[in-house]
Image: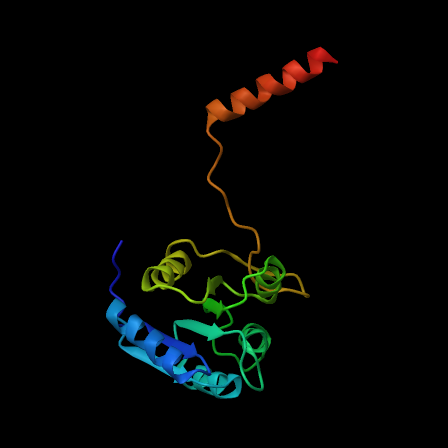
Length: 171
């Protein structure tokens, strides 16, 4: 589905200037007209407070406050303008433990570098079309860490029940 994104704003947090500019150009081709750029986590939180963007896309590795610390600030700081903003974390590190750490901090989506425009668009669409409910249990605040799966078709459930019955009868 195509979206009209010209009224939405994005904050891109990337310390590598060429990557920041490339990401900005891709977002502009999607239709975003307001794209703010920050090269440090500190500047990012400052811009976040000033502009209250509709989406944040941040790199993990930054000087000073890194991407995860920025996510914590956005999600938990009392000065945060919108703790529920979708946050896409982009990184060159895709090890499962890193993905889980990002999820456990409150990241909405995870984007592995290098990425294509299609990959970035897919993450934006995921955040728009399938936003996860937020959870606040005192220790964690962010999008529900569990992905909802489509319901299992009745035919599959029926086969599973047949398998269970057969296993029981063989014992």
